Image 1 (cartoon, helix red, strand yellow):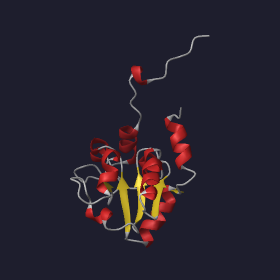
Image 2 (spheres, helix red, strand yellow; image 1 turned 120 degrees about the vertical axis):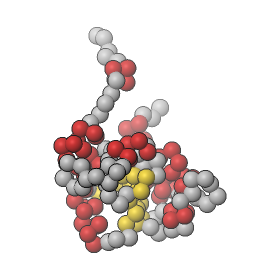
Image 3 (cartoon, helix red, strand yellow; image 1 turned 30 degrees about the vertical axis):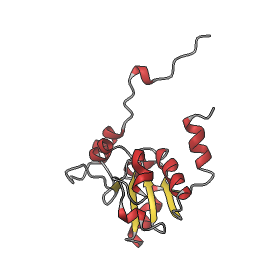
Length: 157
């Protein structure tokens, strides 16, 4: 049986990652980059990289194809788009970039470290209203918030 991290490791054999400073350079030299944030809508509305488009992971495949309620024409019509896939930490984005590559997108990469790393690199993040967030404020919003029942049970010896 594969676990989540196993799936991510497997996808990393096929998916290229870029670091936040690489993305900053890419954005300064190319306006044609499609920034695809695959987090849930509620996560995206809390904060996101300016210019990114929210395509939640749950509707990704349908967004890339014609004839679905979730179809995004800019995706369905352009398998040659330069796409940087974004999530909170860089794991969901690896899995999503892998799916895009399987669907024929030739320039899909994942942002390693996700918006957390982007914020650590002190790059701009906005909330749903368009307000720019202070890195400390963003850091608080990006912190894991696990309930006790979501933590792995401790093994007794």
